[in-house]
Image: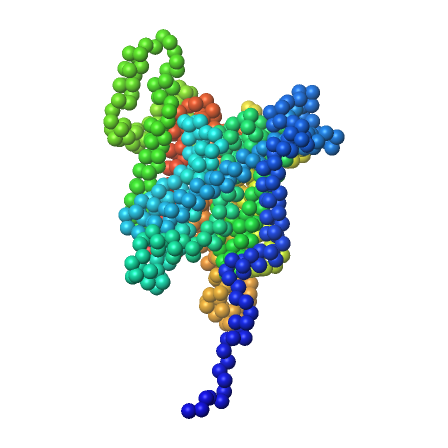
Length: 316
Length: 318
């Protein structure tokens, strides 16, 4: 038999173009998204400043965060003295130094708390969705119960019973903030657990932990990264609210929230004392949310608007 | 409907049980001893007296017995005596209407503002209006409630003098429904409503977009109805159904935010009560506030589900 005269068109032409993987595709999209890039830059600057708070306080501002100057109370922001760039507070302490140390606390609690809540949420959501049965009932019951308690009420009650430092505070907020993550992880796992490739893995004898970690978990990683951004923002907000009320980070350790604790006294003498910490929280959380939205669009443009801040409620 | 209500009520039992376990466990696990809290470190009170009080309070009983007693007390709304020398429930009963008034007003304002915004964003998808609404929504999510409240007081209270800087009435006046109260409510209600305004429009927008793609919308258009009629009769009416389900979520936000808002605006409601009670280490009152707050949420979620089943009968079957 002669070879067919017509040569079949192979997809070779398309294949000549290097294939683009999931992550490099996402990276490409993010690099061309100005809002996300700008937000990332702001966050990076914030982390850098917070990390070098000691150095800056020592060498640039020459002020510690507890140092007072009672001759310069309520100092308005001035360019003359670096320590008072952002003004001084009711005790003449340097606000710029205190905001820097506040950034440390807020970012630490946000990131560490998010690690705790992501860990709990993923572990509980994955196992509940995979095993179903009584374990699923227990997890769903936990989620329902905790979502029926006003979290800020509960945090105040716990703050009354136990002494909290930054570490225990972040663990605590994380332990109460995993509900949304568990719900997402559980839903995704239920959707994936009966797919053919999971059944195939099961049929060749893969153990349950292996299936969950190697076959299901990688599918929800992009979603979880998006949720992590929103989560960090939500935890920073929760911490600042609690510290504002006086049940979170305790003075003299400055946090963005507790810097606003005595704000009623600032109305007339020092509006800058209200604006600066408030703007710091808002900008940080806003950038986290925008990065979350940008990542969601980059990972899967079809998801646009379906998860993240533009969907869920406040995390307070 | 009767069976649905019964089923929904039964579903609430494990939740209430969980809430009670958590509050009870926290009290038991706390390092502070209830007897010391009650008596202080008064040297006149002997060790025997303390032991006697301990026995009388039932603190030597097995934990399950103590829990059963706690459940019984809660069922009778007996939360013990607050440091106001009155039953905790009485103190809460006085404050609760103030909080509810604020919550209901915030809820209404949030809906009145959000519904048009959401519908516009859905219909004008991708246009400037849509982008602006999305931007405002993300921003409102990111601003801490107390900062927004403080700014409001700073600008409109202290700066412009349009609104009072705190409390519920002019000194000497006290009324629940009058012009003076409305004037004092403006600030906390506006700030409270932002919680809902941050997310209701987004939900409505998604809903509108989904309904615009439905067959019955195409039918309505193809039979020649004017676009205005299509939107008003077919799209908006259906898009507004899920508003009902949002009530539960918004109430969570409002109740959680009540501590903050009542603190910023010096509004004597449940949140403010909890704040003061925690600061004066009034343990029975704190415990009672948390329990009552949680039970309010449970009830509001039940009401939400019933309302949703009422407007959308398909829910009852599921």
